[in-house]
Length: 471
Ligand code: UDP
Image (cartoon, rainbow, N blue to C red; front, side, top):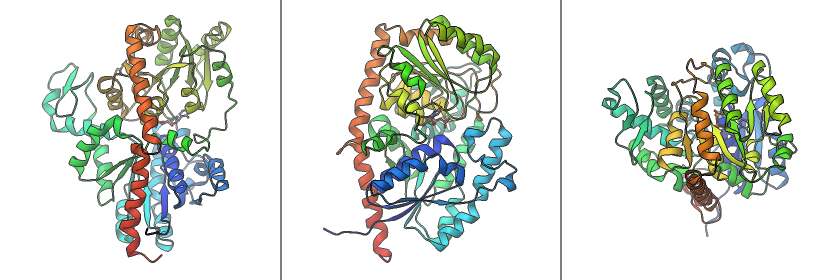
């Protein structure tokens, strides 16, 4: 059998948790298959996953970090603010986005002086198209949003007549499933997506954090639409767990008090509420949520950000009744979702959160936050039926634009009861979540789709790229 030398592969994660976490997983998976991996990133971002890589290196994997400078002075940010997780307004987020363009020169110089066999940047680095082309370096794109979103965006764009009426719901034609949107999408997001897709041109294909059973029809649709090959390799958090190394980035919180609290609770009895790494609820929405949770009578674990006076009394009451806990700051989400006491997840439908919930068979209550999340909601509720839809009162593109309208306490309470009251509908939804979890676990095991895709991708790159290069 032909033995080819390992590929030298560079990964470039974007400066946001929802992008960085799955791409680091992917880099680790590729290294675990004997390839020589380098992650290009800035000092503070490196700190988020450094420890996990030390563990990988101790297991003999070739994975290292090349530090590049974060242009703090140029964009006007204090040193150490390098990730959207630290942004609470559009201005700060804009500076971090600006930095992702300004690193181009340093990355190009590094690629030129130390050319890899393959370069795998996040989809956000649209400038990588021209860099790779001019340096003659093959490139694959990592796309951290779902392929389903892109298909929805395309269907919406090609059927403007679907939005003729003032009031929703709007039927979306042309997709593998009959789908509806409750409110009109914002055209701005479609434009952003088109720019991102343009950046994929001339790539060797697109890697996504997904698995065949979750969205195969949409992968096919996307491949026909773009002519680009899609490699579903996920759920990445399950795949890294398979490697018997820690499951998530920044998860040295194994002793987090919320897990100890969950240990005292019965199976499927606690609702987990988290809106991802960027989304912030308005004070009014926080109040609606708290009132709904209280009225539902169910137990909950809620990740909150910022200070909200109105929550203080609520928190105290819930703690006294041993009914609810608030987590302030970063929660160990994969560990929470994997806990048997968790029976539901109120989510903003970020793609990673969605895939993580699926991985652990946790049914969802969907309250999309911004951008692609309005579409992910549809995959969860209308396509697969393992979630209860709450929806959003309005469309926003940025997580920092406060929503003027709120989702009412009544709507949230009703959805919580539909899922957590344990009626017939809830059983059905739970079964569907369990079925998809089983498919996800199959996909990541030996012989499963994602496992095979990872092997096939490396094999494809080695055969395609190495014969032309000196070993
Ligand atoms: N996450 C976490 N703890 C938190 C908030 C988020 O571990 O308190 C992780 C979550 O598990 C997921 C990622 O951050 O892997 C968020 O990505 P997602 O695509 O769901 O949403 P985004 O943050 O991009 O809006």
